[in-house]
Length: 121
Image (cartoon, rainbow, N blue to C red):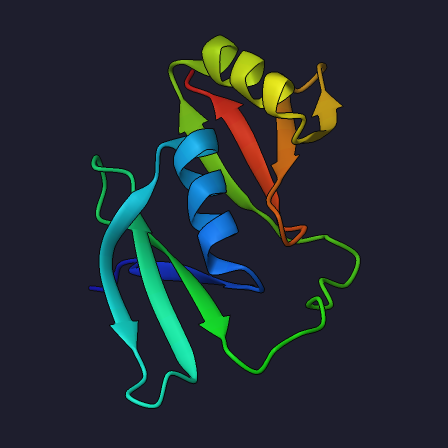
C-alpha cells in the first residue's frame, strides 16, 4: 500500500506565498521545519479535508526566480464551490488560462506555478 503525502513548490518569498495560498485556496500551515542555521524553511499547507499537503520550500540564499520550464506541470484542486472560487480568483487577478469547453481554469501563484481549478462532478 502506498499513498500520496505531499507535493513541493520552491518559493522566493515565503510570506507572500503563504498569503496567496490562504487567500486564493484557503490553505493553512499544518507543520513547519526550519534549519538550525536558518538556511531553509519548509512549511506544509493543508486543506483541512484531506491528508495531502503542499510543501513550500524557502531557501535563504536563493535570489533568482526558479526555472519552471514550459509550465507543463501543475497542481489541481477540485471544488464544489467552483463559481465562488472563480470570482475570488478573478478579483485577485491570478487567472492565467481558462478552458470553458473543459469547464476548468488555471491560476498562478507568486512564483509562477500553475494551479488547475476543477469543478466537482
